[in-house]
Image 1 (cartoon, helix red, strand yellow):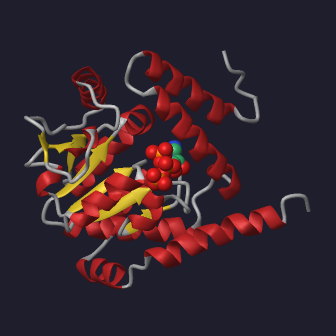
Image 2 (cartoon, helix red, strand yellow):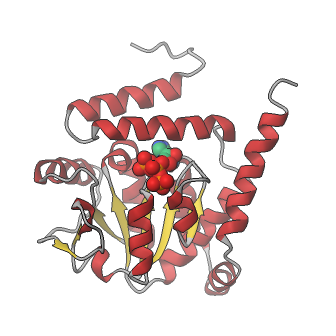
Amino acid sequence: MIPEDHPRYRSLKVRERLARCAREGIVAMEGLAAHGRGEAFDYLLGERTTECARHACRTAAALLVTARHPVISVNGNTAALAAREIGELQRASGAGVEVSLFHRTEERIHRITDLLEEHGVEVLTGEAERLIPLSHDRAWCLREGIGAADVVLVPLEDGDRCAALRSMGKQVIAIDLNPLSRTARMATLTIVDEVTRALPHVTDACGTLGAEECARLIQTMDNTYLLRAAIQEMRERLTHALD
Ligand code: ATP
């Protein structure tokens, strides 16, 4: 039992949840390591949503609501951390939701699908095909899902897959706490923020942006600028860490 007055209460609760989901076969063991990398960067960011990340969330919403066929790609960590938030974003944006795993087994797909459905997510199903130009399991996706998508939101993706989706001509929105990752640099747009903090901002923006605002956000989108701004935030915090 984690005491509520522990200064790291939230972070410890999240770890507890991920560990439970790992035991249940929803999160891969490797996903726990990926979470640790994210936590380290979140510490540097001050565990808050920066102004730049807010702007990126609004731009992400603009891409999703103006897309022809937007899809949210969900892996084990995202499902464990943010099933409810994914459902809310799906309802606000009209995006499809597809389960897509690095460590892919039919059993994990079913478990993650069940968890998402318990939280009101409508999950795309069908026969996956090897449509993504990658040599391993991550090539699999649904023809009518990620295969047909023009905009794909990939929280917590790895760089290879992000690059492969870009090479298929898709616009890729990443949510990644590490502004140095290949994913962050390969994506069309990266939200440098923690996934459960970022998703509600994207959802809120989906409900409020008008057509003109969407067009302006998309026209002025500049991923390199956003990544530099995130790195600058971290640098500032490091510079003043012991003041
Ligand atoms: P790349 O292949 O893109 O260089 P990587 O090898 O770090 O990145 P993974 O090991 O797949 O990629 O890790 C996933 C990424 O997700 C990490 O960069 C980590 O910072 C990020 N991450 C982990 N947990 C969260 C979270 N809760 N919110 C946002 N980002 C997260």
